[in-house]
Amino acid sequence: MSLNLVLKILQRRSWIVGLTFLATMAGALLLLLLIPSRYDATAMASIDPGQVDPVSGVAGGSAANSVMIMQGNLIALAKSNQVAVSVVKRLNMASDPGAQANYAGSADSGLIDIQQWLANQLGEHVKAEFMLGSNVLTITYKGASPQQSASLANAFMSAFNDAAIAAKVAASTKASDWYAPQLENVRDRLAAARNRLAKFQSDSKTLIPTAGDTENEQLMAATTELTQAKAGLVALQNQYSAPAPTTAAASDPQSIDIVTINNLHASLSNIEADVARLQVDVGVNNPKLLEKLALRASLQKQTQQAIEDYRRKLAERIANQTERVATLQKVYTDRLNNMIGVQGQREQLISLTREVAFHQDELERLQRAASQARLQSQLSFSNIALIDPAAPPTSIAFPKPFIIVPLAAILGLGLGLLLALIAEALDRRLRAADDLPFATNAPLLGVMIDIKPKKPSRWSNLIRRIRLPRWRGPRPPASGDALARS
Image 1 (cartoon, rainbow, N blue to C red):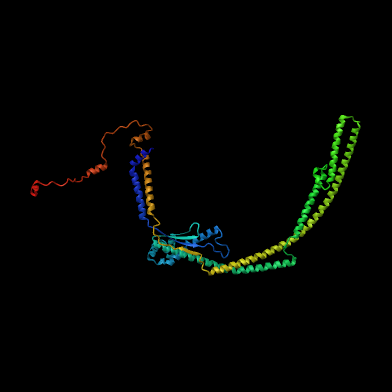
Image 2 (cartoon, one colour; image 1 turned 30 degrees about the horizontal axis):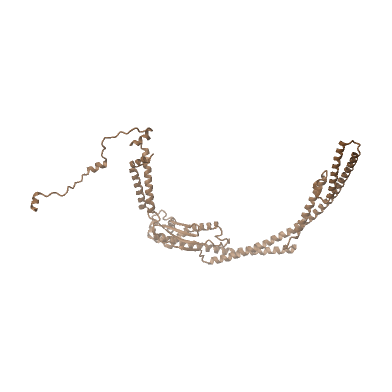
């Protein structure tokens, strides 16, 4: 659809756009006239989150979660029923004849008293919140007049401050009274723990070591020595179980036997090579070959004897190492048993000492908290500081004409254009040549010009019917009058 066609459609349906625009603007103006004006007055106060709870000893501002909980509690208190009732009593609203008449005509008359009824009415128009990223509490009252809004906002802030102080004083007084029996119980438990510690030290003759742990050092030394001895025994057993000495045994203290055996094996290998070469080059009865054979037999005998001596010595070493492992195992067991007994006594001694220290710390903490609670119960708790009292607002909070009228104009114009396009889309009549291609899906070949004179519109006929007298100018004087004047 081309822009020209859209403009023609809007021109043809301009009455829809106009009526929709006028209806929307009329509705906006009617809304401004019928809805009563509302004025918002705000009172601001700074809330100190650094107060310490007298029972737990935890600061209110120590973590983000505790701050959020504190702010939520204060907001709930500002919007609570007790604060609203206090405002009604402060302003003596129950004695107002207008309020009494409204209460008498309400459905709650007789069910609740007038003070509670007025408090319920006020609570619906109060908003309390903390400014983002700060500890500033704002209490806003939405009233019908600037003076009423400011007066009630300040009254709510004052009543909230008194309620918060009263709640803290009551909590601190209860906490201070709660500490007296708790301190007595902690003192009794501390004295009993000290008596048990003194009796155990006197019976066991045990003290907490202030230097290195001798028993533990001896046990660790025996453990290390036993582990090394077992490793050596396993290494010797592996060497003995091998069919021939291996190169891994070269690090053994008696490696000289291994070296001798290896040298004999090397010599025997050379003789074997010489025997094999002579058997090919000379006869079997050659003197050199016979000499080499005799030498080979001697080397074989020496090698076998060296291996037997080595295994005999290795067996003796295994027996000695086994006996040494058994001795070290007994030493380790004795030291372990001694360590277990001493460690048990020391652990019990440490446990009793920790019990005494725990009760001592608990007693000191409760004494500090009790002292703080007594001080808090006597102070006035000035942690709520009024920053800015509510002043009568100079502008209407709702409805705002400078926002509603432009929005209504934009909405009416847009809705009128949309309705005009929808009406044109639903209307299947053909009024112009441009409508034929959309209706028939065929090209336009020509247009027959209508030579018939156009009928006058209704507005033209109405204007023609209204006959207004024509002004013909001043009437010319008669001839007699002209002669007389001359």
